[in-house]
Amino acid sequence: MKAQEMEKANIQERKIPAAKIQFLPEDRAWITERIAEVLESGQLTLGKYGAEFERRFADLCGVRHGVAVNSGTSAMEIILRAAGVEGREVIVPTNTFFATAAAVLHAGARPVFIDMDPETFAVKPEDVEAAITPDTAAIVVVHIGGIVTHRMPELLAIAARRGLPLLEDAAHAHGSSFEGVRAGAFGLAGAFSFYPTKVMTSGEGGMIVTNDDRIAEEARIYRDQGKASFTVNAHVRLGYNWRMSEPHAIIGLKHLERLPQMIADRRRIAAYYDRALASFNNLDVVRPAEDGVSNYYKYMAVLRESRDRKALKMELRERYGVSLSGEVYEEPLHRQPVFAAYATRELPVAEDYCARQICLPVYSGMDEAEAQQVVEALASVIG
Ligand SMILES: Cc1ncc(COP(=O)(O)O)c(C=O)c1O
Image 1 (cartoon, helix red, strand yellow):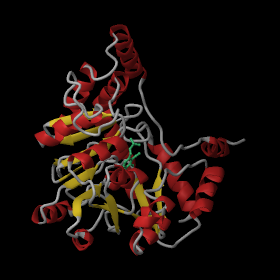
Image 2: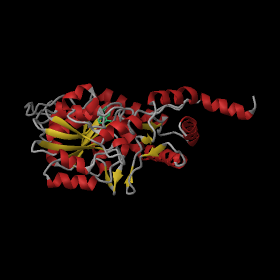
Image 3: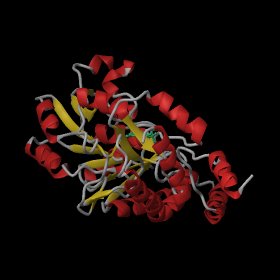
Image 4: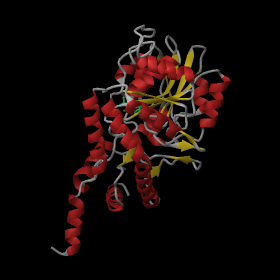
């Protein structure tokens, strides 16, 4: 085989995964050492590593409080409960993950689904305003794919004018910002996820961030079985076991330290895609605002012409070794069977965009040769 042909065969054999988790050997050693330490000490939950993780994550977001929990889902439910939504309505986007709306129901409220802004994949202030009723208890904004919408100031203004808390589902947005304000720091409180596919992980885990002393206090009560305090056995809220263990906090601390580099890696690949995809005729890229910084949890693009996405993904994977990452989202929530009772109307923008949207692989440690393979595969398949 000639060198050129060999090179081509090698490239096609190389598989580009949808996502990849990176723990460097020295980081694995650091984590292992500290897990051994907490196993030795027996302080396996609500200990010094959890407290340090909370402090450092709050610093990242530029807020006063961090409260570590065992998932992004519980972080979301806790901030909803702490905001007092029970028995009322909460406005949520339809193009989000199941857990955003499920947390509303678990907190005893009813989700009111609204449509999406095709430019940012977030909600539009007009749609939020139109959905507010006397029963509205809160507005949830989700930073889809890591992009904070440039319309955040308008959303905050509506929330302030109508006297409603704005809550951020920031599960995608560790380190993202708009006009210098970090995701999680805009509203009354923010909920982050450290699920393994996220930009940073603690294995499983979540974090509540807030500048509000009362919300922070409530969150600490809720996450520990509704107990008034760690040492007092008075159960003052219907809490749950939502605590984060020390081994999870240790893993999260190390990934948090690596976050700037991991985001830089993702942004480098995103810049490569931006340049390479500019000439494509059938693909529009979803870009962060000029004054915004995305962590590129997802590199989101939209097919101009509708295609059979399953077949497209299979062709990319089987012929070119390229796995696309999961959509955000494949199906809007008002079309999910479990939320049928809350699907009161059609939401045509999300129905259209969710069907045409794809996410390119992007992960820390990805190199330009891999990104090039993705672009070439896409060029062959969609052009
Ligand atoms: C938008 C959104 N909200 C909430 C969650 C729930 O987070 P977790 O899986 O950590 O419970 C996720 C992710 O999994 C998510 O993508």
